[in-house]
Length: 550
Image (cartoon, rainbow, N blue to C red; front, side, top):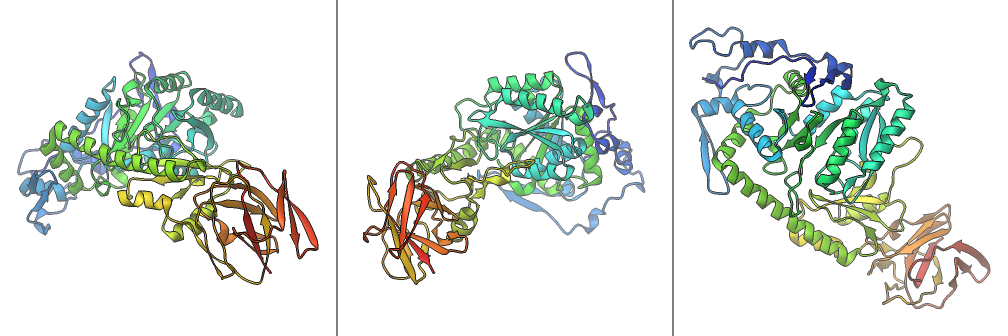
């Protein structure tokens, strides 16, 4: 006999909250969200709960277990535990399931939510296909063209892509080392109110936030600031979409709290899952929040994916059953330690090789370091055309900024992930020599004088091969030197000036033909022509040889 879910419950979108007033959730929804209703076939299935054994089920469209080719499925865990799916467990692992999730697993995960977050009301929990599924379903029922949505700057790239088709009006809130800044959230809300002319249909009521181990910045919003943000949400009638896959990846001594833990007014839709803790391929996620919103997600599940993979749910159910809370906590501690070590090594390598070249905050949770390159405006070519072919891959930062009307997003940032890199490769990726450059002839050579640099930066010969042996950059735009500074990646294989051919940089002891004088670089070619190039001074003046192809 198969496990069956309890009968579906139908609720008004209005709900009494703990402060005693009626919360009308329909006002937060777009027409799609308001129009979402339960699927008739799924509702009928729940109506047959409790029918006597032996009844003839002409209603159900299930698959006959006789055709299943599996006799049993065995699972062995790394801690020595094992279990075998057979009989009724096997049938539940391969048969259709309830859209809200396999009931025993759903019960386990709801108890886990209560244990770790202690929501101040009986919040509903359903299973979703990974945290992105829950985020996507929430956005689908709430966003619409021109309606305001409030997001961190930068924010999760896939979250941006989920929002993009709805063409909302983005209002961004800058982060510091502690996440989004409450005062700037208020400014964004006031700006939205003014821009919308007080029209509640355009004002928007959704704050999307990754509060712990923010992707990409790695910030964790402290409890005090979370309380400030939650109060602002109450004052401005916002719902908080709490996308929190890194809650357990916290490297601080104190465990963080969630917005759900503070949710006395039932404004938080919390999305989390087991992908980052156990296995991403099983796609086990949870959505927790007010029932009128969570049941809309369930109704969407009924007509989209139907339900999560039955075998995934059964394996996770049996694993948690073996572990208990103690075993789960051991897994959390193990995962934290694995990623903490990688983070610490990545930070040590950054300090060793990138000091003075990039700015970053120490990530307090999650899997990422967000870096801003000093003295370079656009690193896209550097990342995609020079670093990647040499086996160092990072994500360009512009991916994490929402569309900006009339302006480009910042292009001098990148996200570095340490979660999948082997320990022995982390230091090597920072320290490996940058690029080799082919010098093309014929060339004329000019030189910039150097002072007080600690050691020779590189050398060049008259051969066609140039090895870039230390970190150095000079940025060119048209015929202007914009800046000079140490840098991780060499841009010298792809420098160009308008119709001027290719520029190549080298260091050598050839006789000086050009000199830095204050803010100007005087360049002599062929002993005849002279041109002034603007030169932005940095800490050092560097001795460089510039080669120009004809």
